[in-house]
Image 1 (cartoon, rainbow, N blue to C red):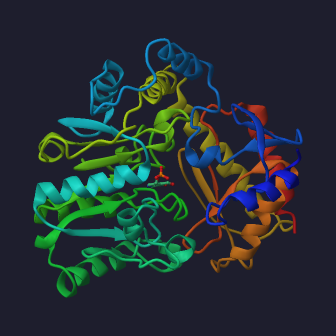
Image 2 (cartoon, rainbow, N blue to C red; image 1 turned 30 degrees about the horizontal axis):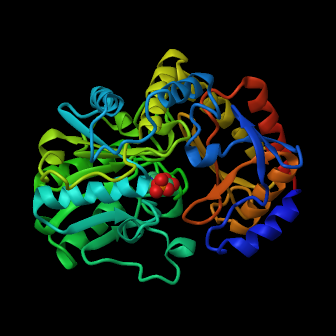
Length: 423
Ligand SMILES: Cc1ncc(COP(=O)(O)O)c(C=O)c1O
């Protein structure tokens, strides 16, 4: 069956809310390459939304999952313990930028952010939660209330929950400075909720869906100081920015601060569903037994995959690769920005291999062109390149290649991007 026939079946069988960015059905994927059911080839700059940091079907990860299948696939951590789960938490505690860390495992990023808030609320005895505009923390109800973008995520549902507030994320070239954001936080504390009522400030150090905007070091350090001053938990959501994507295991390592809780997910499972929560021991240890967990949380196959992910990030120097890939893509984008024959490129930004660029209405302006951005993503697919548009203003193209993308595949992807950007 071809893509069109499968999509006809799809629209009869699935609700339209479960949407797909690109109208293709995949037959096979390996490394940073994807083939659809019509045998068309694509370079993968989406990585299954920043999951395939270690590429699709990395042989070490596949072997680890197969090996685990010799013993057991699921027993349920709330029922009996198993060593791969324990050892994974020990490894996370060792690599996390928290001096005295404890960890536990979950299944999805939304669970990780919700559990972070649940733990912070229990630990502080407070209910308030502050997040940022443009943030994305998941599609479940609390995570959605924390999420700072209405369309399409919060459309048609009551977009708030008691005690959840948002302040503007600082994006200087779109008119919000660090000082503006801190002032908004101060106003929030005066007008809406006192800092003594706030359990957590939750932030993505580099926003994912919001557009790969980076918080500055001084901004993150100010948040840390405010949290410490008022006994608020600082939660970093590293579901998208974690596991080597930014050239460090966790993006928060760029900021020289110690968060109270870190929500993780996506790339840690090497393609299998796995997420987790790392926290300062006194914080994450505060809730009673049974407070945390889930039927599939820390599934043994996913744990086996995660061990292999950590192994290959280390043995294949993927943090070094993230830097090299990021700087090659940024050079390419800066050259594109100077090219009169392509659509106008606005801001180009990167932290390691978390690279993005904006499409604007005219060269030199910052006015977003969301329509053109959608067109470019669609044209790119026609040329054989999978990319995802994103951003608070809808005009960002994010580039999340696997961190082990082969050089020739990367170059092929970039030349297809250049074609898609032609006026
Ligand atoms: C920063 C961030 N937090 C949370 C989530 C939610 O993760 P999941 O889709 O696994 O629930 C995402 C997903 O894109 C994310 O990017």
